[in-house]
Length: 102
Length: 463
Picture (cartoon, rainbow over the protein chains, first blue to last red):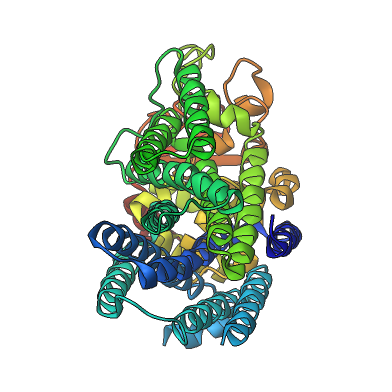
């Protein structure tokens, strides 16, 4: 076990608690956008995919790494765009609505 | 450079957290999502800057193709198809996690080294969980898209088969760990393919009504897989973001199954909707059909009207007509509210999104707990394309498969008008005795057409 592993576990545990306490307070209205937004956030896998593409050498490594990058890119880009589409439809009051409708 | 990258990752993680924080309020939600996206951009840019980048052309081509397809498909999809779109993107993430782990294993082996346990364990975990999330999400997508039957498909002993398969896969992963051999890659592939099969047979027996729970659960799976990929690559932003999503997905899963008054184990292992149980179908008596003129009179002269939207409304794309009805009635001084059951539609909050699309202000939308005490003081309830969430059997009939599920108590209102296309059973495949009650009137027709004729009837009758 290396020293940085403990730090990694430390970050992991804190992030689990952060997510837990943040999300218990979300009203049901926002459950679908929230699920969609967190779906986009795990698209952070794109960072991991980039790292493996950087160092891939030889056909089989390159194919697997490129597939990882392709899937992760779909996840992250599609995830954020879909969430934004959902959220742009939320309107606060009739006046704002009127402006948006014009 | 690596210090700058770490700092950028920290900023990205903070933006993810602030983004989720802002997603708790409708007024700030959109900026929350944008902040999270900015965080993602920062993480990506600082991953590339200063790195010894190989395969640059390939990288750019793959990234651009993925981004174009992702943008196009999420722009083109209809609002009603949102749940399956989220499922599909989630599956992509799961597949990416498995491929990252495989890629890392390939690269380590080509250098003639085996990764240490602290990387090998999360790597194998990624291949297992990422692959399950991948194929499970694809099945959820196919079911919601209705490219395969939505109802639960199961055979006797399926849970046992799944359990055995899971145990075999875990044992395989352990053997890969403790017996390093030249066949490591072949074994990795067997692990991945086995996990893909497990994901399919894990989601196939789950009925369409439970799909929201499954999507929430698979979202959590992919989150944890992303965190595991962070351990494989010793990358903090993956760990933090993955852990955030893992815990959020878990909470949503619990919220969803609680709303249906069913334990998560029940959802996963009971093949709900596959068994049509003891309720009996015949001895309910007669229904009372009605027409748009009668409904128009009832609504126009009511003090309070509560509209209960369900998936039928979404399928008919009648949310705009709903909004028009609200406007017409509100102009006459009628108090119009929307009652939103937590699992209306096919995802938590699905109905809210659809009504928001039609510009219904969200202060008109009431949660189940807020609206239930109001039904006794409500003149007319208009149930549009909903069924199971207003089924009084959930309250009264211990023999019903949905007994104990919290419902909207619409039958306590003076008059209930139910708009359905036919007398067919709802998504869960069970009967609703409310349709036969004295104060229930059946207003048959496609939601869009029915609401349009109702609107013109109101304008004629009371103008």
